[in-house]
Amino acid sequence: MLAQQANIRRIEAFDLARGLAVLFMVAVHALQTYATPEVYDSAFGWTLEFLGGPPAAPVFMFLMGAVMAFSRRSGTWAMVRRGLFLLALGYALNGLRGSLPTWIAIQAGASAVDLGGTTPLSELVTIDILQFAGMAYLVLAGVRRLTRKPWIWIALAVVVAGVSPWIWGRMSGWPILDFVLTLLWGTGGEAVAFPVLPWIVYPLVGMAAGSWLSATDDVGRVFRRLAWTGLGLLVVGGAVTLTDIDFHIGDYWRTGPGGLVAITGFVLLWVAGCHVVASRALRTWPGRLLAFWSRNVTVFYFTHWVLIGWSVLVVGYEAYGILGTLIGLAAVVLMSSLLTLAWGCLTRRGRRSTCCNG
Image (cartoon, rainbow, N blue to C red; front, top):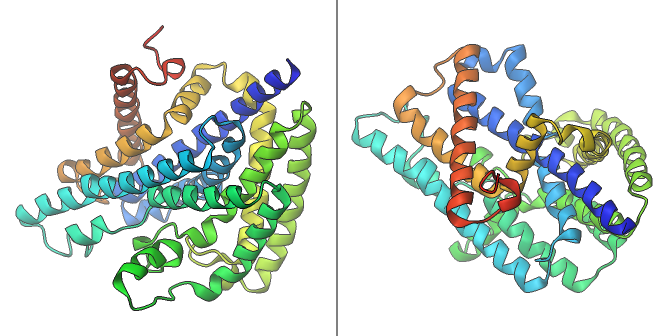
């Protein structure tokens, strides 16, 4: 009974952290799409940029690894199937949110300047979080198959953090192999937003944390240890980063070792903090909404990007002030939530996280 209660508390903490991460990612996507450059470079824009940084994707990646300890679908082949599905879904999303609207805009007379230099093909081959998630599942399936020792996973994360900067952008010259290498460590700015190296660091650390959490009845003690560890990593990583900020911070997509250590520390502190407030927070209506997004994260994330991609054809790109950006964000969140709810009801999935059953 104690173990079951511990698992429930852990899942609540994960739901809160993941729900916030999803909201912050949607917010920064709305900022990047709707806000004028002046708004983007304002205090408002910087705040959303921060929320869409360490508390968003890194936390999301960490939790992707952490929840594997509590998942019924954590076997090797189940993870491989999930990884291949997410890869395919990522490219399907590229087509729906980017390639098709871009093609329609070109047919309507939009210029290359209007489109920011993008083309239907460049939109299709963009590597974003779903492609990373698919590759991460494949990598983690192999790692878990080789060893179930969390400290080895942590050691592997340290190795990845150290070697990643030295192999970014290295290609073979063979098109088929280079397609895979681009996923693993490609460069090219936003065209390769989430290369496996270094981003696999976060789910590796998360997988270890999830393993330790699933093996104890004293969840609070483990989260306290994670918090103190996170604080130490944040201090050490920050100090290392100050020795060469450009190298260790990078362009966020390709963060150097010091930045990775600091962000990992922040993630541990953030998730531990979510554990402290999760029980009360998730019983409020905003908390229940966050939990709904968390438990339906793939559908919600997919839907919000399709809505943003097509909305540009109607409302324009980088054309709004703070109020207009907030209205756009609210509209995307509301419509994404309703469509996710409808999807859950139609497919009879996620009954616990939708209102289909009252």
